Length: 335
Image (cartoon, rainbow, N blue to C red; front, top):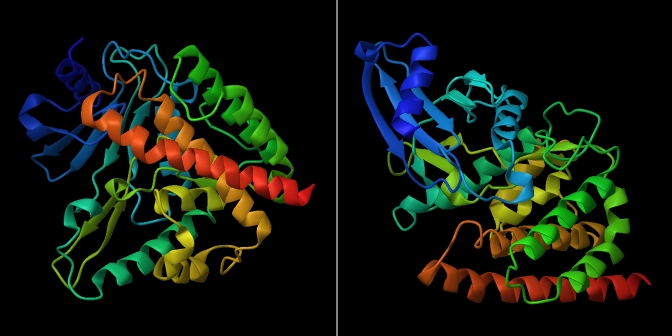
């Protein structure tokens, strides 16, 4: 079924006749689900997301991504920057297949405005974003850890158990897809396992987006008066350690250098300002390793090629190797 037919089926299921549709357009930038923006003649502005027809191979954790996304938006419903869920059908039995309809948020992806900010605007926006993320980390949470989709099994009673399941899954995917990695799978698993004791320092699950790179942060307003307009694409969220979000917030960088973000975050986060002690730094290294593994392994089922594949290997693989060395060194000190 073509994606346009899926969109028509979703609108029909919601009682939206063709005459009520003022415009409909595909949105690019996503890496898994198909996304369209639909504006209605009565002023309603929606985003419709559905798995692409005939979706092919994916990583183990990517099954049921819409369940994660709906969970994220509903858990964060008190945050103005987050879309509201208009309607969702998450079961495979729906005539159109699973989908979610959400309110559209204003603005353009942050990275599209790089170099066009007024003086001091980037710093102010980073502080505002810190406040938003701090509030998200205080959202009500269930009693367990892991992916709400249960793609890797039920929520776990401890963060160590959940995160071990998550890393084991992506390493199993690496073997399934014969993904190119800078270290052997067994060596990576042993390195991560030796540091897993530090995960026991996390006792309260938090709402973790885990994909907060600038493409998923919308910025709205005129130059000099810009603000965070939206935090979108929550499909890769999990219940876990809140500082795991710092990895994508400083993708390929170091969140400790982002003083503006950390200042805003400390104002709103449940635990107050962040203290970068030994435990937090080691946990951050584990989460960096997990994200880098995902970035490398997913190139196979997505058939990434050319310059993008070369960039991923040249930029991500050395960072994964360095992070594993960092974890191993910290673990030796502990021992």
